[in-house]
Image 1 (cartoon, helix red, strand yellow):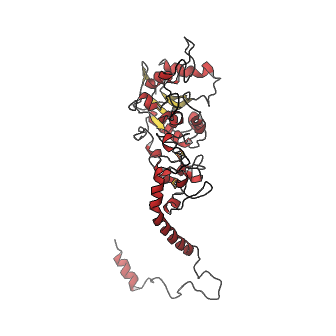
Image 2 (tube, protein in one colour; image 1 turned 135 degrees about the vertical axis):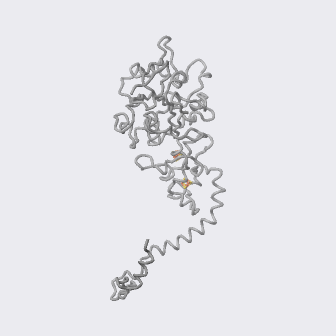
Image 3 (tube, protein in one colour; image 1 turned 90 degrees about the vertical axis):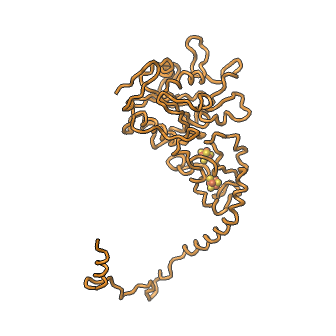
Length: 373
Ligand code: SF4
Ligand code: SF4
């Protein structure tokens, strides 16, 4: 299979592509935490994708500065420069990590840089790279809450005026592959959330999957369609109005700052690495790090969320009664039946005279008649 190239636009092939390049840029307002987090994924691991161990995926070339075997500098920048010139022969997926600053208000300098302009020697900003690469990319993916919605760097009082990728490119942006921006929020991304999404995009590039289903905030629906609370194994405490008073408790943490009931995230359900870890499920309040309003709407983190006081008050009488009733039933369920003993008599209710119907028994004949097809 070959890929057609017209000018800078890679034309999608009906049967999909057999080679895809990933150009990952984390030079925005970023801590590289999403790049690091991605390496913790097991299903699939980034190595599985790069080594071609997943059946049906295209050959994938990953360029990410944290993982790059390149010496750095111009050697690392070469594929980015090639893509910016429109000379990439295979389709590429642009992954942005970190929020995008407003370079219109950078004063005399630059908020970001990723390589220098070869002619002027001046820094090339993240914004310049996005302007060059996003219109040519087969797909555009935003990794982490900073790249998706602005995140911590875009909080009130920040000097860079930074924002998420869709704020920068427009929410109706479409890539060369006809896809909207694919947002995978999380601060950082849950490793498998990101790798699953990337795998879906790659299967779509291979021509063997439809586009990934996204919600109105461009998040994968199957990952962000439920709330933290719906997947939290402390929700039974909530339902019984059994609330933690401090951070050493195994009970529901809503009164000590957990935002789980209103947050779209699957981490407690999924765990962090290999099903281990998480947030409220293991004692850390949910601070809503996947949400477009993060962090300002949820601060100060360790105060009870505003809706928490009403909902916990409403559930209190019901929870107290249910907890009491369940306690009684639980006490019963914790006793063995009284016929489990080593006494001289059998007290299990065994009846030695009971027999199933014999072959000649008329009741058996009648039952067989009844059950005839
Ligand atoms: S700890 Fe948070 S997410 Fe878990 S049950 Fe309580 S409120 Fe819900
Ligand atoms: S559970 Fe809450 S704090 Fe944890 S990853 Fe999800 S949104 Fe972030």
